[in-house]
Length: 58
Image (cartoon, rainbow, N blue to C red; front, side, top):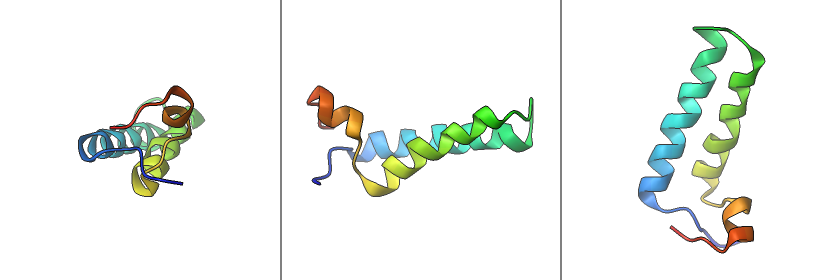
């Protein structure tokens, strides 16, 4: 499993992930905010399965 997520992409994923998780506690308070765990996990691991399927490397 080689890294296919670059530096800027990781930063954007962390920001989006934290923003979505924040929705669980502030705002509409729906469980959909927990989807923010996915971009956070891919940012910290450095690997995105969707990128692999599409042949993208950042």
